[in-house]
Amino acid sequence: MAPDALVRLDAVSKIFPGGIVGLDAVDLDIARGEFLTLLGPSGCGKTTSLRVIAGFESPSSGKVLLEGRDITALRPFDRPVNTVFQDYALFPHMNVAENVGFGLSLRKLSGTEQAKRVGEALDMVGLGDKIGARVSELSGGQRQRVALARAIVCEPRVLLLDEPLSALDAHLREQMQVELKRLQSRLGTTFVMVTHDQTEALSISDRIVVMNKGRIEQIAPPATLYDRPATKFVASFIGTMNLLQSRFVDRDGDRLRFTAGALPLEAISETGEAPGEGAVRTIGVRPEDLLVATEAASGTAPARVNSIVFHGRTLRLHAELGQGMPVVIDAPRRAEGFQFSVGDVAHISLRRGANCPMLSS
Ligand SMILES: Nc1ncnc2c1ncn2[C@@H]1O[C@H](COP(=O)(O)OP(=O)(O)OP(=O)(O)O)[C@@H](O)[C@H]1O
Ligand SMILES: [Mg+2]
Image 1 (cartoon, rainbow, N blue to C red):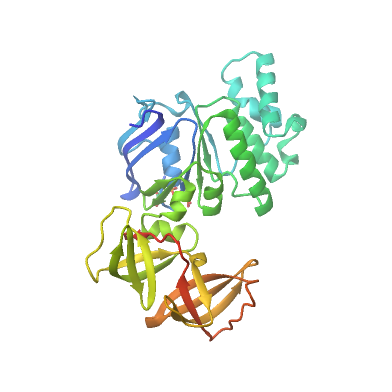
Image 2: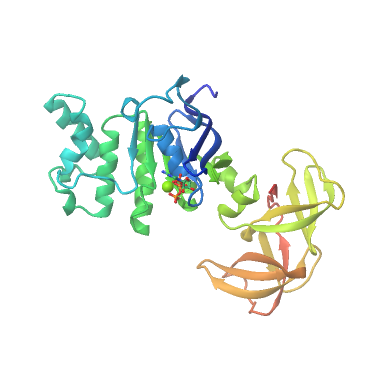
């Protein structure tokens, strides 16, 4: 166990009635004070992981540890953990202060102490002036903040957030991401958030856990996940990645040379090992790491442009390398007179210094 791990899932499995696998032998260390995000497609086990940590769901096998202590059998209310649910679950008949103070009233604090802490929590989420408002008078973003205030007022060691921003519009959502991150740094509380939005995960997290079918595919900080995805699943889930079937040619130091059709590629060997001569591997290439030119040159391969999509600063070209291999390229729009039309042949090459991962399945 990592020395600073606050929560640990130790080989946790959850099998639901009918044999449905919610979690499949998940090992996870959550560090004290980190902002950890669980990311993955619908049904991959994100909510189940949170519910197991909160104690609403007991594992079929495996253990939940808090600072090394086995809390698997502890009831939710006895854990120093609070949850913000996706639908906020506010009490509609109570005003803002009563909602936020609800958890405190169960703890038999004095009225003055309660009022002080409710006021502080509401100030923290920027809603000090809404203390007496009715929940029905609040916007979606404000309800979201009340739910947050209600969760932090009890000063949990771990705050669990299940898709907390999914009900908000894009603009408010981005604003709340910044605020959530700021709140987390200020409180120093461990946040575990669930999302299926990769952009949100990349922008807010210290580390991201990518899940697939009840298992963990990879745990890494955002930049590592983006630059060095370990598996095809992670590569295709985080941003856009061309997965090119490539043949190994030779190695040059720690650089492994491949060709995808006629396109020369270079990959970094993470392990220092090289595949056998002629072996076929999947190489991940980001659309922004491919360059287009009108003329063939050494290191280029022809690709027919099938469509051009406007993306603002860049144009996304969907093209086809030889043998029907699809490839996506992001080309700067203002580039010295971008001059391709659908049906043209572009000569594409790998940007010098591009870091292409060699992916396992
Ligand atoms: N109470 C339950 N009874 C039976 N199956 C369940 C139950 N809860 C979850 N599951 C199943 O376990 C799997 C994981 O569900 P979970 O809710 O953790 O997914 P998720 O990653 O949160 O998905 P989403 O993004 O859709 O919220 C799914 O196949 C789901 O159908
Ligand atoms: Mg869920």
